[in-house]
Image (cartoon, rainbow, N blue to C red; front, side, top):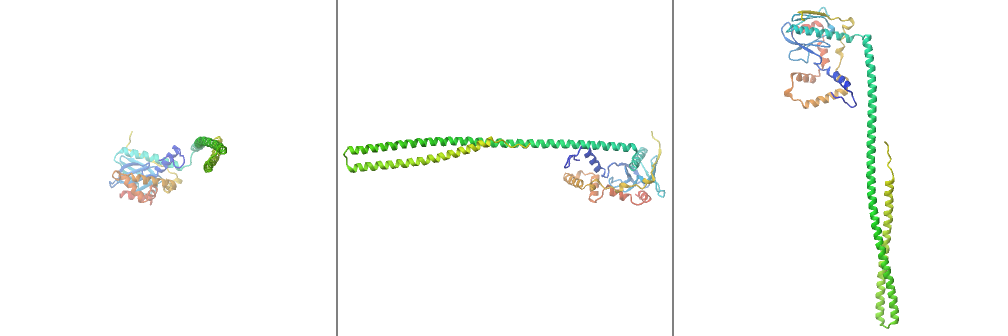
Amino acid sequence: MNYIYFIVIYREDAMLEYLKIAQDLEMYGVNYFDIKNKRGTVLWLGVDALGLNVYEHDDKLTPKIGFPWSEIRNISFNDKKFIIKPIDKKAPDFIFYAPRLRINKRILALCMGNHELYMRRRKPDTIEVQQMKAQAREEKHAKLAERTQLQREKQAREDAEKGKKELEAQLQRYELEAKKAQEALQNSQTEALALEEQRRKTEEQKELLERQRLEAEEEKKRIEQQMLREVQSKDELAAKAREMEEEQKKAEEERERLSAEAAELQQKLIEAQEQQQEYLQVIATPPQVHVQESEAETSDLTMDADLANDRSEEERVTQAEKSKRMKEQLKQLSSELSLATNEEKMTDEDKLHAGNVRAGRDKYKTLRQIRSGNTKTRIDEFENM
């Protein structure tokens, strides 16, 4: 039996639930003895807390005749002969034979003990028993309160542990984000340095072109002065001037191109610096944290008048019928076990139990059936078995 369903069930409570289910089984608490009726038919006598039952020799699960303790007035034996006198004086004695005297002694002791407990369960509790039950209830309530407190503390620890794990996960995420931001910042700084270097080289080229332009202008002026000083051919001077103008025009276009490229690099540098500031702001922002053997003996079984007709056990139902959840759990467990069952290794009791389940019979339905009719009818039925 599991100690855990959907909530925590403590060991003693689980054992009590287990016993509640086990007592509904046909062979629970039954002591079996070989007996014979007057005709010599070999049968089983079952003695349990509810009375005496008679079984056929090949079936220990399904009794055929039953006698509750409330119907029995006196029990005795003489050697191997066992005599049961019913309360109904019109009914004959219920007589059977055991194979040995020792067995009759055991049957008598069991009958006396079970009958005493049967009566005790149906009488009001004495003051001492009431006090013991009250003390047991107080202890149970105290233990329940302690369990509840322990459960709350356990839940609080689990919640705290869960919160701690969430905070650790959040911190790890923040550290990962910060690491990524740091890497992005480093990449941005590297790109900014590269852009700065490229802009510097462009400026140097621009200055070089500017010097070349100035040199060209000086050369032009020098040539013009030389043209004034020297006498040359007009066509040669014009060609020289056109050539110098084309070179000057090309130099001016190259200078404009380099100026535009320098402006574009300057804009990229500004954008990289802005992105660098955003990464620095992400890194600087902290995370938000939310944390001796004679041959003959006899015994009179006393029975109060008020209890003579008390057969409340016949109205009982199995524990599974009381609880829908338990019925479903037992059904599921039976299905799982049936898959692992080796039919070749099944005992006769296993097969009989399976047949009872298929027929819809249980312990208390069978009990009501075998106790039906008056005592005389059931004794006659026993003699004819």
